Length: 120
Image (cartoon, rainbow, N blue to C red; front, side):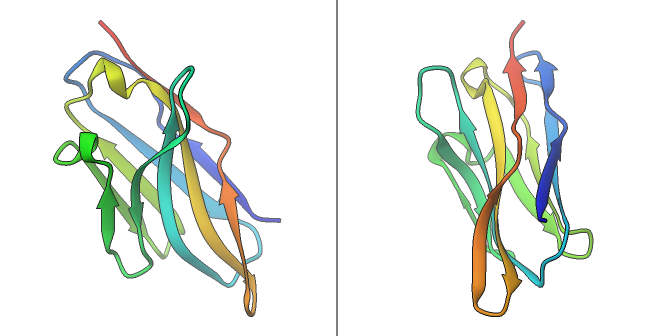
């Protein structure tokens, strides 16, 4: 069974930084694109940043220049470095990954979510 386990959320003051991590474990043969989504109260889940297996990245406009997504393919882990945090970044952050569990068989997996709260 494949699992994505997140860590690194918490409470931070405006202007502060946090680093989220998401590690994939279980039986699989490949990890394709990985990404971070967030969902604030009363809002839809939105894509924050994504990264391909080759390292190409994509960011939601409001986080460009502040957030950096990266991955370690040896550790099967994706990271989200969040700097210059704003109160509007407050949300539950979810890790997502497209994982190949067998030849020609890929599923999207989600982490359990980690709360990020930006407040003074």
